[in-house]
Image (cartoon, rainbow, N blue to C red; front, side, top):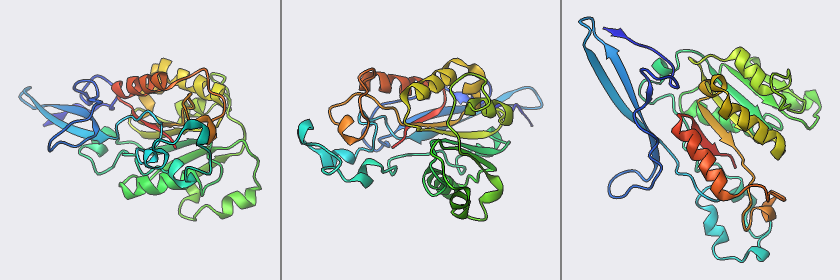
Length: 279
């Protein structure tokens, strides 16, 4: 049997059969959003066989955080909210994320290349890079290379003494600010284009606490078909205006709102990328 092989973001044979189902379902079904994929194989006699499977993802939530955050906020008036009234660990919790698993059907066929992690706003290893690397490892995905950017200057000895030995050969740390200028050497998307292929699995996290740069990078991803085809899972802490968001550290975000954020995330999901709010 001959199998037509192609990456997940091209038309054939790995593609969403229809747009992402982004709604709550009832009864015995899972209360998750989902992607539906179709694989087409051509037999030696030129007949076609098809395989269809589903992959679930957490629903989009207007808070940009996990659903349990509401348990702590409840009906508290916005003028009463602060860092002290909502536990910081709940605000920063990522336990709501339903990430890609390497154990899902056909993962190795869809991604026969390498597994790559891009972490923009990484701080040091023991922050988001460790979190993502360990969670993916539990799901059967070991990163062949991890690229991390952090603008705050750290002592190199401090940075590397906290990176476990087994991760050091594949960990690349750029202790410099991220540039949003297209094709700039310090723009992580420039490096992404050079090192990644559509056959790779690429996880990309964006949280540098600089709205203008973040939105410029997101615009480049959404408008550049090459970039879009290279990213499979995308995490973004989108700072938007809400009753309590500014009081929890997001500052003044009057230029954006929840509706715009949800629309952007849904659009990216519908085009095939596993898009998540990053806490």
